[in-house]
Length: 487
Image (cartoon, rainbow, N blue to C red; front, side):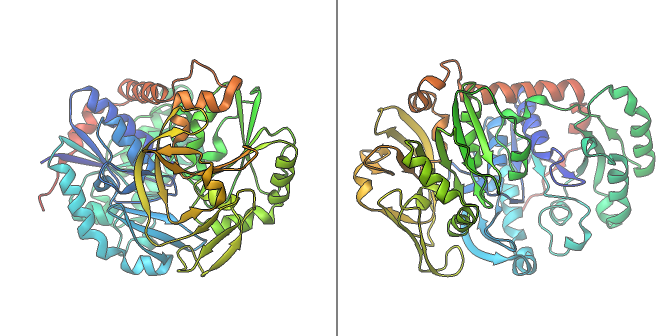
């Protein structure tokens, strides 16, 4: 059986996902077999797995870093927020229910056996399992029935490294304070602390590291310096969208309305990698810029709700005016559904049953359905003939007259739709812009022939591994790992 080591955080966005990804690549570079694992994730940024399910995008990236196929066992419970208090619950890659927070909190403990089974499955075929916790390890109000942090760690006997983010300030209090508020039995699982995202001279933190070690009774590792290239990798959480750099000098302006339940937003990453493309995430309350060349409606976890938000911001009027002026519009997945005439939800898949009027820019209608379509696709862009490697992850069927002009062909079958003037397009294909030849053909002169997006991701993971090898005692970390318990 493998050895396991778990990384928990003093809060959200302290860099756990990136650390695990970098360590997966570093261990793989050493010739070790390693797999990532996150018991429970909450994210609308998901990926389709090799075994036909879905997991958090961060775990798919970590699997890639480990040079392994993504599997549903790597993220056995995925929560996809659908509203202010509810989420779609995905277990072992498949949607099982939609629940409000209180109902899930009461029932989540029942999922622990499946979580442990997935963890043990991974442990049978690797040398190390690197486990990522969720949110903050000090949320004692959520400790009952926990499967994401110490509830899992206790059941699995997993040793813990507690990670703090120095960038947000108060890292000493965050690390030491976590020990002060959690149960002593949970604190006993913590084998070390780690200070992440440091900027400046690391020697200036020597006294801080000593203080943390004295107060907690465990070694303080790091500090690990800030990794500047992190924005070149797919982000786990929509919070990261606020920190993404914008290429102000791009000649082609792509505008993306920032919808409340935006999903699979890593579709935008290859566009942002193009020097000639300016990608603007349009914040609520702002009008559509007049110089927009392409409006891209992204995926959504709650299509009808996000369509209502789009209208509340007046973006429906702006998009119609943009189209009348000769501009182009592309909808991906939920955005594709919004472009049609109607979106019907007879079974209440995304909320209260009903029908919403779409933007009417495509002659298609959508009916949402409980069964989610999850599959990796090899497609061909219908207009240029360029290959597209993407995936389907949606609940619903879209049909209508504009389907006679498909966006793509999948095994000869029509996929997506296009308006008669060719300026409004819709597709269910996520990940489409990762295909370099298609992206260049679609963007035209604004696309650089020098950008190889997949190579960029690989190079960034390699650079991250080197970064951690240089600034972190990986041997000391591995010495903390303990064998995975057999089932």
